Length: 442
Image 1: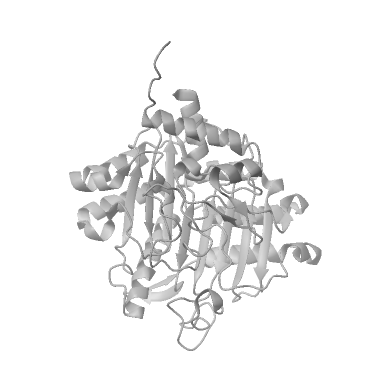
Image 2: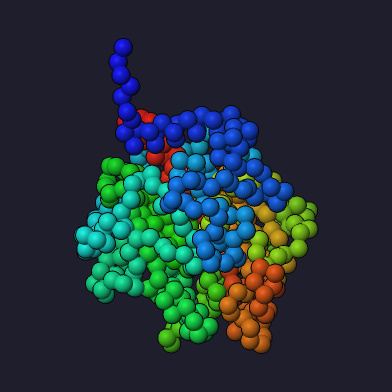
């Protein structure tokens, strides 16, 4: 009789992952038993927190709500990750390891160049295991100690290497939007007269999961106020979700530069809605009143249960389906162009099962919420009430006004917008691709 052979940490983690996945296929009851997820009446989920010191229960101390780690959000461990589902049961066979024909060589080279520019101490603080809980420890709001290396602490030369990495990962529009979010974050710091460390262009952090490679799985996370990019790479496949982009304000002049954000996202949503017939719009537009914060899938909601709402594209005309794809492309288009096309093909494959849902008014200047939701993509746009901006007179989407202060209970405005993109059914953070990789190659 042979003695039991202890498992390595990697083997034990993989074993738990497969065990969790098997239980998840058993349905909602198994999920509740394993992870403590129970459906809530509002379509969200509450999740039992991990006992790991890296994943504290609930929101980090001092963290506000407004789509970040607010009420109902709970940080979990990577081993307990399920992903966004409609009912707690993961829809299988949606993702596969395959060649996309899109090289990641430049991305790997840019990531390695950035890491090579760090000191030994900075590297230790920034690099984690590819399955580390740090993947899930992100938020779009400040108030806690972020991990990794802070852009504002780097020399200009090393900071440029960081932006070069973002440039390799994102499209030109995606990089511009990210930089503009950072600039308006600094504007908000100046406007509010506080937050001189956090409300700056420099309070954004890089962390790396695994080691940059053209063959082995790895990824990086770039996060700060109103911006969080999770980027997983396996060979020539990439997954850029969850990606949170937001701003307050969305339009201002910073250091002589006029910056306006989320105009395309606002227009594309309205364009799709206005292409629908009255009968279709009656199914898409909710009777629910627009609140100051309608976002469902923000930080701390990795195991969200969210039912489909609205109208499926199976009931759209060809022109309306094109408008829907145009809307999705605005968000997917923040990725590097060739990878975005791969992602769009994935979305289009499930177009009939893609739902469009709307809350709020429908004027150009209205503060509204919309959602695009399919088995493989979840997009949310939410015009929220102001938290730190908009206490001046006026209103609308282009002026200094914002409808008054008040947080989530206040009047929403286009001067405070949150957006998020996720990959439902377990492939946020590239988790399902990693599972398949471990299952087949290890």
